[in-house]
Amino acid sequence: MNSALGAAIGLILSIILIVRKVSPFYSMLAGAVAGGLLSGFGLAGTVGEMIAGVEDITPAILRILAAGVLSGALIITGAASSISDTIMKKLGERFVYLALALPTMILAAVGVFIDVAVITVAPIGIMLGRKSGISRLTMLLAMIGGGKCGNIISPNPNTIIAAENYGAPLSSVMGVNIAASLLGLIVTVCIILPLADRCLRKIKLPYSDTVREDNEGGKKIPSFLASICGPGITILLLALRPVCGIEIDPLIALPVGGMASIIATGSIRKTGKCLEYGLDKMSGVAILLVGTGTLAGIITASDIKDVVIGMLSGNSMGGIVLAPLSGILMSAAAASTTAGATIASASFAPTVLAAGVSPAWAAAMTNAGSTVLDHLPHGSFFHATGGAAGLSIKDRLRLIPFESAIGLTLTLLSYASYLISSAWI
Image 1 (cartoon, rainbow, N blue to C red):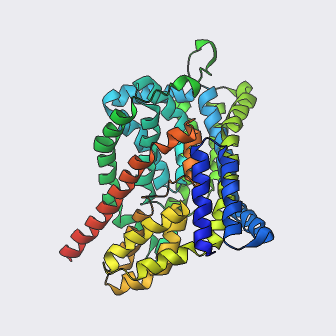
Image 2 (image 1 turned 120 degrees about the horizontal axis):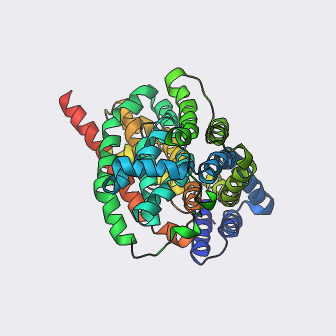
Image 3 (image 1 turned 30 degrees about the vertical axis):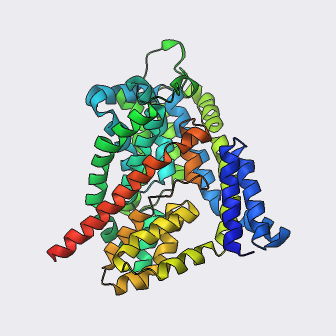
């Protein structure tokens, strides 16, 4: 059997099992084994590719676990409650969508992996969503939407790889998508999120099973300045890379920010409880990521990417449309913004550039296209963000159409920005 078909069957099997409420880890493990065997890798080869896939995703797992320090500190010390109260007073319920989307946009824009950005903001977002009364699903969608808007203008791996493959300066690739990012945030906050909340509000998901009153006994919560200290230091450390060229990985920045939050709020005695809470929240997500890695290893080893590339190569729509379209399809195959941008830019750069598209715009449109379907269930982003909000697999699936709408909006805005800039030149 063709390896592309075998990998596709394994992927479909995983999704079916997940939807049927089989453990996501074992669903993906079963899909990986089936996909590898049907692809003709043999038993030993299948196991080898699965292990290689887990090795590739290990950095993400470490960052997810490290994020637990900050997340646990924000909840247990009462800092999340303090920050959410302040945001509500400053922006009010009328601007709750912006209050949820803007922090993740900023984190992603300064170079934080989008799943880590969502997990970092989630404790604050959960408290804010509970107080404002919006759906827990809409709360997560707002954070994801903000993260996508920031991701297309960030120095994250997807942007860096697209810039390198198209031979464009990284700063130029980030800069040309600024208008699409800002307009995308406006569309997300003013149109997509209100529509999503109306559609999802009927699904009753109480916040009580996600956020408990960890600020024991109704004690006075810390001040806003003390509460913001941890996230502020985290953002500052992460911002050193684009500002000063000093790279501090989230693996370091997140725990440092968490400890800073504990110290600033005077909660040293709660350190153990903060760490325990954070690890408990993130360990389940980490297990899901291991399963994701096994399936990703089989997909990467198959020729499913070559099949998609062959289909696109015969497309007559031209190099301009090929840039975002290849990003959309490749990110769907891998359920990853980085993988989608990498495969698309490496495979189609000559064709797109030959059509007269400038390197910076070609990379920017490919990067934007990679956000349209990077959240499918066979990717780590789907499970990491769902775990951050305490959603079941079934409920997490409900967000996919709205996430795709946000990604498609960013892609169309990037494409329109290119056409407008070309008309002016």
